Length: 331
Image (cartoon, rainbow, N blue to C red; front, top):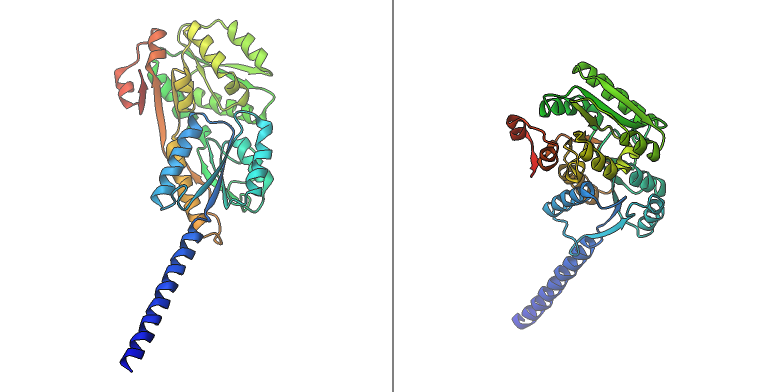
């Protein structure tokens, strides 16, 4: 009798062990189903920092790539026409979430699906950029971290004034055909007026006009370029920095990447931090796919970067106290 019970117990124990094993396998298989899509307009400094922050946060939350997380990445490499087909590919791959950076990639993802959650990192105001009608009522599958960089225009101008005490006027180039650009210029103009800085307006309609105007620009001592968010201007950044360097015309731009490329200084949101916060959002979506998306959040970490090499070439004497306050100094 005891032998029979022992045999029965052994079989029951074996069956229980198998149940535990198959449950563990099922759980592991369920974990490997986590799949996110990444849609990038290109892989510049802003995108690489965003991805770094995203990966760091997902790893902290227990999502490890190739272990329990698959990441499908599509990089348009600067080809705007490639974004929508790439977004369609991600949808076809049945990703659970799509991560995007910037306006065009987010628009492409939103056009490809109204069901798959889209989490973006955006430097400006998503509503002003045309991603939604109202920031308080975004599409049900769209959320992310937004920099609202235009709100920091006055701060950016004030930093430029501190960095260059002899500053007397700011030259602002913008696409006069673009309402978004015109609005950004108006904000900068109002902020400059509060700070007592005269603004020289350069509304241009094409890249050729921008190049011609900047090349022939005659400036008085104490002049500087100030950047407002504008695709036309940003598309000619290399030309602007080269020409400004020749003219010894300092400039203030709105992202770290521009300072690395040659702007004298930059003030803008930390893409690394925004990427981390986007990762936290994506983690919540993966763990609770049936719950409503979290609300759009504002970036709260901004960085002041100074390119000392550019300033030194121009012969600028930068106040040491301001340099000490910079988050990064490129030497």
